[in-house]
Amino acid sequence: WMLRSCQPRSKGWDEREPILIPKLRPVENHILAELDLEDAETEGGWRAERVCQIAKRMLELCKVRVSCVPGYHVTDLTDPELMPFIGPNHMWSAVHVEDGWLLVDFSEAINSATSKATFREPEDFIRTHFPLMVRWQLLRAQTPQTLNNFWTTAQQTSRSKAKAL
Image (cartoon, rainbow, N blue to C red):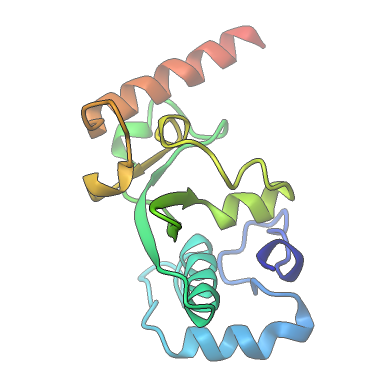
């Protein structure tokens, strides 16, 4: 539903642009009006936070347990030298399915227009997403990742991709 009902981010990167397609805008307005998402830099909260909250509300209506997970997110566009100075900049979902939790980045899936970005193993997810709460790392046989290790790995990955170009 989220992939069909949301519009990808425009090239202008306006954090305030609507999430849902025009005919569903009243639903978006209703959900977001119930929440306190005011942010100093973006009225109404960051786009990823709003996507997460809309997905959370829709899943809760279907009686699915879900939690919004704030944290750090790096992409190919993230400057490796600035990485350690970035504050929490993203939000994704933890969805309870059967007997476990799945990490789902609806915002990333909407922008990439594929479900590949959505469902990833925690060991892969932690390479680009670092939750503020350790419990949402969901790593099975590993000790929890530290923020310092996350930044170091992200910087190395970013530098090796730059050298490959």
